[in-house]
Length: 296
Image (cartoon, rainbow, N blue to C red):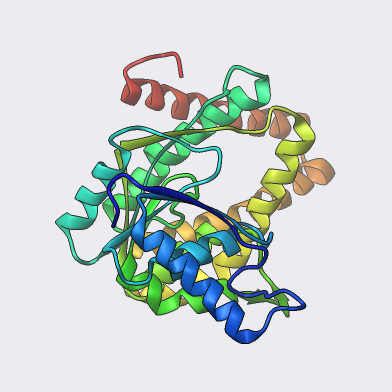
């Protein structure tokens, strides 16, 4: 690939959509031109017809072809640490049975509001405790979109199925990162996490934007849970255990609240609330000890 060249290309279409006046041959020539730009330049900015993040990723995967060993993915607002790529490559180089690896995603604007600050605390717990634990057993269930790397040879085994994913008759748009991870797991390959690879990303600071984000993530989680369950037998028992616990816990919590509301006494309600606070205190204390700093 080129070492110091860059290029920009305005594509009025994309790999899946051609213009009303465009022939199949001219569309094929456009795809070949995009592929050639990607392969012959160090950096390329392709402005194509809008189709969502999955369409953008598909363009990159198809244009790169099998010309590279690994493919790194990120979001448009991701700020990468200089060593982030190298650290993920190290993980993939160490074990040929590792199909994908994710890094530590941190919040850039964590002091903009209480929502962004609490999100940053949640991110730290999610990556440095939950994903770190999953990584120990080789079954990280979601390589987060802002920072991830995959074996290119595996991507080309399922890129078409990944792009054309449907659920209940509708084509899926969000949840591309979780489904990409699930596709790797479905082939029997491990997925890992490394805290040495870091990046910064923005998070919503307003409640409604945050709620919309969480709704999308929750929908994709339960959709992918059903798909993920088909591959429990290919991985460590921990993957099954954690998936069952996290999948059924929200329903258990709702049932508990309803039971307390209708049948619980005041002492039962207070005990429940105190237990929730105690668990939160234990988790935050453990995180502070692990981090070596009481300030998150």
